[in-house]
Length: 303
Image (tube, rainbow, N blue to C red; front, side, top):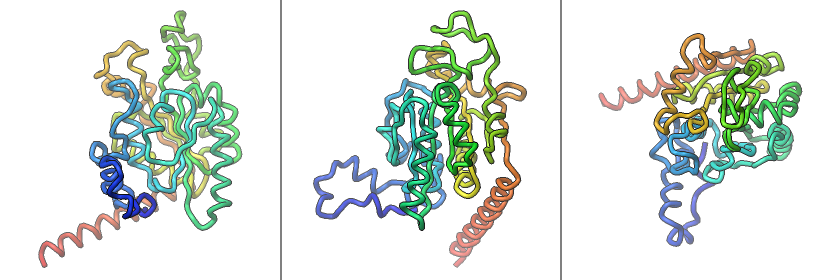
């Protein structure tokens, strides 16, 4: 990673806003070991946002941005929904697609980047809600997996249409009653993680975003596997606390309650044999790196 692309030209530095200077000087780009612990310190990890107070999506967005292994060479593709309110605040290249066609956009983008920059690593990450991913955009989602497109798809699962008043989505729980779904969901929650596995995804995770270290780990795994092997999918529970009748401070507890053993968001992780081999190899290298860094620190302390 490198800070070269966000440096301010010396002749313009004295006229730049102090907030921008701080963003550039303190950006985590180029920092070894950047991650979720940098959230709250660095401006490019969403210092402010336009979502509701206490919204779990704001937590998830920050953790994901902090976890991107190659942020300056990453393009995120979003779709209509609450997430589209945050992308203007994000210090990463991003594209706003039409509602549901985000995986089609990402497919063309990934191929274009590979053609335009054959000697560079360019990552593409799709981030959309359950409406765009499993309802309106399901065909585009599945076709990108069938074609083995090398990018990561992340679904922020609100279990309803949070951005437009609480309509039923395919990922809503059976029997759940919402403001604009008064008779309750009549069928079971669509099992998209299982469908992703059966549709060719090499790394699939079902989880909440209550644990930042876990989010960081699975995002990194997903991006690396997508880069080297093929499509990956993360389904993360980001409940709309307003639409499910919770208070602004109750989002974290809602996620913790939903991830208990046997419940719908209990942590599940699938790896294809190729993905497992790659992730094991990466873990071994990271262990060696940490051991070498610890040894160097000990040596400098005793010198």
